[in-house]
Image 1 (cartoon, rainbow, N blue to C red):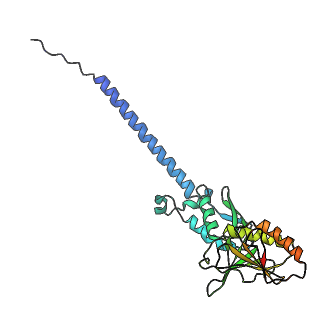
Image 2 (cartoon, rainbow, N blue to C red):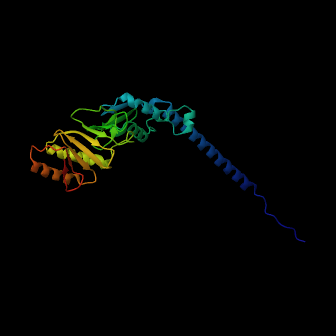
Image 3 (cartoon, one colour):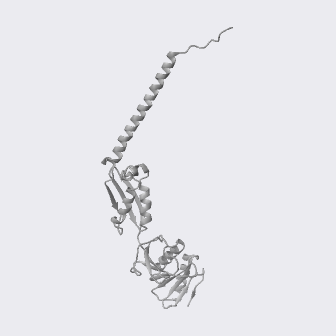
Length: 276
């Protein structure tokens, strides 16, 4: 009977493997320790020293908005934290200029202040944030008179509404009365209305006809009236070709002469003029 043979146990190879394993573990532990130390130092430099802390905000371009009105929005951004662990440690992440979220600040300011048309935010490293703003220029006031009370707001050439205006804001501003119901909370005048209205205003100015006010009636939809200093008003509909209708009006008025004083002139149907 032959006995089975087994390979001899290599004590040297096993010891060498154990030594290598311990060496790898030591390297991993050392690397992790160094990483933790570096992360701790970086966190301390970022959040607990003044080297990257925002110290001031500068504003330029403000005309009607007070800087103090925007400061609460700045404070709300600074007090926010993206990482919950920083919040639990009472660390103001946004106070650090490297982490300060300029896009969020821009979105909130533009949403809260419609009068601000454009906003550029830049970081002046390492302690200052610059805000360059451009406010909208009002060309008129829109008054909602479809209910018991009257509320007026400014608007610009894009039809954006903001603020509180007087019912009569002076001869330099266009006055529009909106008699439609349910428009009080509108953020802007529809482009389908404001664009043709402004075209009529410009054309009437070229004809040296002064405008007293504009009125948007409850119905029919798309109609608007222009009251003039001549004693009559003009009727338009935004679906017609406004510029062509103004050419028709000029020819019509030239034919009628200076003494022509009707009650109204209806230009709602393209190529036609009705009057009373």
